[in-house]
View 1 (tube, rainbow, N blue to C red):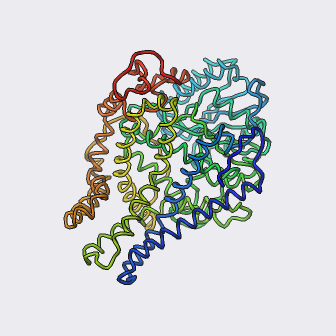
View 2: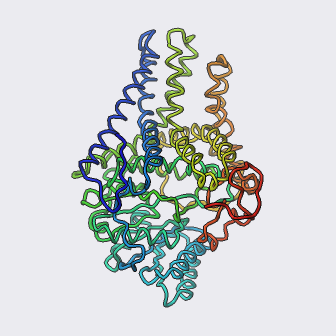
View 3: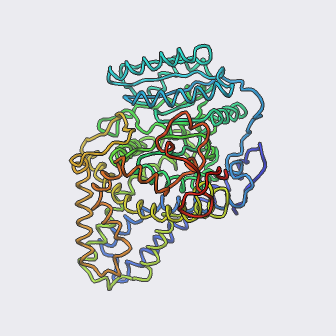
Length: 607
């Protein structure tokens, strides 16, 4: 059923992709029906009263993404373990000749708005330098596309571009353009580039201000795009840069564990209808310019007008035009900075929330592939799951205060709880399993003891974070209903301690939710509520978590602890040396592959 192919340079037939998608849809449907029936059985002995039905409906809304994550992880693990070449198994496109010279012209698009110019210059200069060293520079041109609103920052951007243009004169052109109006946000910024310069290039590599890619990673994308004329978007697998932010360090370790099995599993059934995440991805400019212009949504209010989450819409439009969208699940050479503290993480998520909810107007667009419609629908459901989860928890709490649980089945309730819990963490469990059985990966992540300790603590951390985010999403969606919006502003990048008053002003609803949960749990038998203690503890400590994990002290402590280590810290790639990352400045020697938490001798770690 989960047969994988190791045939290089050949596509998977449409018939086989249909079989894969049918299998996945059946797994999703069977799991959804089974878990829904199990919950109905749990609630039904006393009769399904209105409160029971409310709990059941909320539970059903939360299920799809949990089930999808689980089956993506299972399929991803099977591909990783059974295929000699997992990347080719899920992205079976022509790789091109790695020794042949590039033949195309590619624009590097650095899309910025009110960003830290010093960091931006460091990243861009390092990328250009690496392309020059590798001999690829004649095939690239750098465009700094500014939507900056502040004249002082715009002046710094102009000076930066002038310095880079002078430094790389004769080797790579550097063009600076600033728009006076942020029309269309980032998508509008790229659209303006396409109208001005799109005909001069074959491809465009889209970069965020915090993006960084090695020359080899860029060339890999370009070679594959050159070798596959029907490939419209090729998304690289983006990993977090080594960071001195305590918040980002734990978060990106968890992401690193979950993303590989999840992405490989999803690519197995999505195939040529893959994702586009808006950065660190290569676009074929001609079809992108002709077919991927975003519509303005009619009406008034925060869900009308310009589409915020542009990337997924551009992907489905590219697919509608007959071009493939694929993800290349290689964890090499494609990086980004993750939000340095909780408030920025929430703000970024809320922008995605508003953008994804706009998709309700787009699901019915003519000509979309069935998989594309499903992706838009699931993108909406991703955030609707948060108020549904809050509703489920409140409904269960009310149920506990108004009954003694006698009319409900505890045995099936326990089965549901641990089944769903296992499904939620399945992507991380699957990748950890793959890491532990492969010596090279055990070495890269710092040894099995460190992997297990980091994994266990990250699970607790993410369990505490989940209700914090759910409360934020729910309140934000309530605000959308009365006309509040988030817009598109500059993002926080650097590590800086959050002021306690600011954290309190933003996170007091989470604290109140946690306090209410703690009061409710104190009135219930401990044997009944102990598994959900993180649900109350996380929100209750939200302010303290936000402030403490934003400090440089805790960030440095996280680095020194060597927990939540990513492979780039064990054996830093050469391409990161020009970035002068604080997280790597203290790196003196890799840890021995197996001994645990003690620094090993200074010989290089096994790659």
